[in-house]
Amino acid sequence: MELTTKEEAILSGQQGEANQIAMALLVDIGEFFEADKLIPVSSAHISGVSYLTGGDGLIDQLNLFVEKEAKVAIPSTLNPCGMDRNNWEDFYIDLEFATKQFEILKYFEKMDVTTTCSCTPYDFGHILTKGQHVAWAESSAVTFANSYFGARTNKEDSLSVLSAAIIGKTPNFGFHLTQNRVPNVNVNVEATIEDYSDYSILGEIVGNHFKSKSFEFGAIPQIEGIHNPRPQDLKSLGAAFASFGTQLYHIKNITPEQELLSDLKLDDEIIVTNEMVSETYARLQPQQEIDLTVIGCPNANFEEIREVANLVRSKKLKPGKEFWVFANSAQRAIAKSAGFVDTILEAGGKMISDTCPEVMPYDKKRFPIVLTNSVKAQHYIAAPSLNGIPTYLLPLKQCVELMFE
Amino acid sequence: MRGVDVRVKNYIGKALRSMGDLEIKAKAIVTKEPVTFLGFVDAKTGLITQEGHELNGKSLTGKIFVFPKGVGSTVGPYTLINLVKNSKGPLAIINRESDQGTVSGCSVAQIPLAYGFINDPTEFIQEDDEITIVFKSGIARLTIH
View 1 (spheres, rainbow over the protein chains, first blue to last red):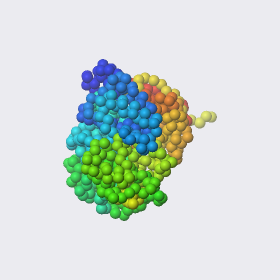
View 2: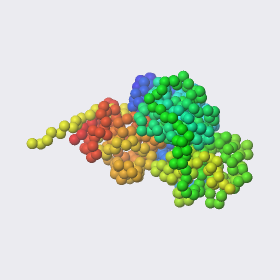
View 3: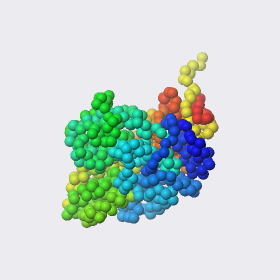
View 4: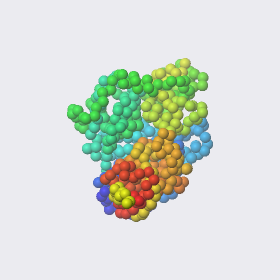
């Protein structure tokens, strides 16, 4: 990889140790992926915020950067942390965890990172334009940035994105290059896809179908047969895709990079039928009674909060049940001003900000099984590496019917 | 008469630039399955803790860990850092394919990473093989003893 004189100077330590550490990592990654150069990025979205996933290694790394007075060079936002900052005790978080989590957030603040924590930064003003180069981590946000906005980012990891934020650059490879954004599989949707969960299920079916195939930058579906999706539907689809390694998809006549699509039949194709959708729902539906439902993976936007409010209005949570809605503090504030938050709270539901259904530790004795409306949450809450709790899926309306009376 | 060992013993791959020059000699631990670091290994003990995985219960500590590539969570690199912080990390990692998280984790945790071999290292290296890797100027020379 070619470095400019200025970049070489940073690498040799002439702009301080923090910049040197960050630059060394970017050079390692760039050379590994045979990037030709570093390119400027205009924003960063940083993952690796929850103490549940980062542990003490995360604290050490941030402490190291802060001691060396590292600051981010570009607007940078944060992924969910492990708890609601203002209300962690209500969700059975212990003091030790909370203390570590506050320490992590303090370090990010010192580095000038915006500490509104959410996996949907595009829902609180961090929006992008087609062709804009950025460095984002968090798989669902990366997929949304690439597919919905047509912006350009690789799936940065928690360390590379921090380095990119400090230097303001990232290695030029993968999805930064047009030739790697061309679709490599066809998805023909014959099924009726309408509900938010339907989009999640579509992602599950397609993801499973292509998961054993090897693509350098993941499967890039070219999708036909989807009509009038809302932004949250595409977020839902992308999050499910992302849990199978897809970080970019195109939909005919809908997503921004239509010029990359073709009428040529690609070698790999799947036709998604109504039967496949029903079978997948059947496989993921709960077999026993569940006490906890989590909504908001990725974090719910205003429209999703409104939908929950309309479904639970004039109802009451059944005894022994809990119903948690994860939304970032910005979308929650808008929903609050419209009265929807109060409706949910009055019915007995809870609202949670700053975190997400996956990176928050659960009291497993209290909640041995979980219900959700999102494929991504279904995958990751059950993952042994995270909470390892068996998790089932139903559309929102049915989740509400099981929890409220 | 002693039998002739026809296995090739020397291989050349690439190494991370930040790693400098060094020589590592250790036993190999090998899997052909991609690895999701988050939850794969207990950072306090170095023991692999993934039920159903072929390496479940074995230790990474002080070994050269050979696997195809890392997959999954973008916070996986912190698992490598946590391992090294607790002095339970592998001495080196050998990968077949590219994965950004493993590159980042190795670069920051200073675990020497060898990659870019023409042949598949998960095929030509066997479990418990004694291996030497010489890292020099971005090149990794690997010898199986």
